[in-house]
Length: 430
Image 1: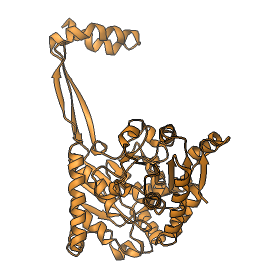
Image 2: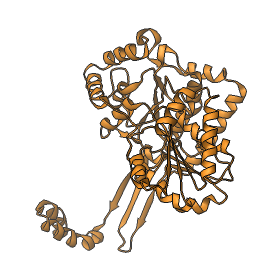
Image 3: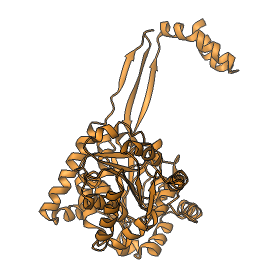
Image 4: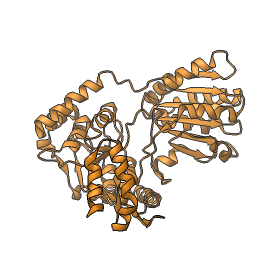
C-alpha cells in the first residue's frame, strides 16, 4: 500500500524525512559493472560493443547492421499515420520555439576603465543522444534531446538506441528524421555511453552526451563526466501533485499514475488539505489501476513509493514540496501562482487544474529531461546551454595595461608567482 501521512501525526517529521531520504535507484552492483563495461569498451572497442549487443539485445550487429540510415528514417516518417505525423510536427515546432528563446547572446563591451571585455557562445561540435529502447522507446525523448542541440548549432547529432531483437521503434526513427539527426546506432546500455565518450573504430566520439536511460546508463554518464559533458545523472521519475477538494479525484489519480506507470521505482505523491478528498483519490487510483494496461508496473510503483500527505493548509505543504525538490510539480488549485511563488526547488511546474504533467512530456515546449532525486535543488532541465560553451575574452591596449598592470603584479608577487608578475612588468618597462 502507498504511504499515508498527516502533518498532525506525532511522528510525521520522522516519517516524512524517511520519504525524502529514500533511495529508489536500487543500484546494487551497478557501479562496479559499469566500470568493467567502460574499461572493456576502451580496450576492445567495436568487438566489445558487438559482444554486449548480442548478450543484452539478442542480435548480431554484423547481421542487423550497426547503423540505421537516413533512408530508413525517411521510410518510417512516410509510413506514419497522418494524425501521428501531425502530432510529432506540432511537438517539434513547439519545442523548437521554446528553445530558440533560450539562445544566449554574445557580449562585447568596454567597462568604466575603457577595458574591452566580453564573451562569445559557441556550440559543441558533436552531441550524443541516448534514446531508450526495450521497456521504454520514446520518440518524445529524441525530440527533447535533439532539438535543443540543433537550435544550439551542433553540427553532428548522434543517436544511440538499443534495438532488442534487432527491432527499432519506427516512431523513434520518424522523430529522428524530423529532428535532423545525422547518425543512429543500434547500441545501448553503458557500452553505448562509453563508445560515444571515447569513440571506437566505427563510432566517432562526441563532446556531450544527453538523454535518459536505466541505472547502467545513468551510472555510465556519471563515471564519464569530465571525459564528456553530460546533461545530468537521471534517476527514477517522480511527480508531486498539490490539489484541493475542488478537483475531480479521477483527474488527480490519473496524474499520479502517469508517473507510476513509467517504472516500479517511480514515485507519485499527493499533498492535499482535505482528508476526505485524499480518500477519494486513493480509491480512484485503485479503480484506475484495475483497468490500466500498465497496471503491473504502476501498482508496484504506487505500493512501494506512492504517498498521500494531508496538511492543514496548502500553504503549509509548500516547504514540504521544496524539501522533495521533485522532477514534476502540479499545482491543481484556483490560484496556482500564489503557490508557485513559494516553490524554490522543482524541475518543472504545471499551473492549474487543466495542466496535467503529460502535456509537458510531449507538446508544451519546455524540456521534459529534468532533474530527479532531489537534484532540482541545484540543477535545471535540459536546455540549449547544455550544448554550448562560453568563451570569455579580454583586450588591453598600452593604456589599459597601465591601468590594470600594477595591481595585477602586486597580487602575483603576493601569491609567490614572480613569472606572472614579470609578464606584466616587462611590458610596462619596455
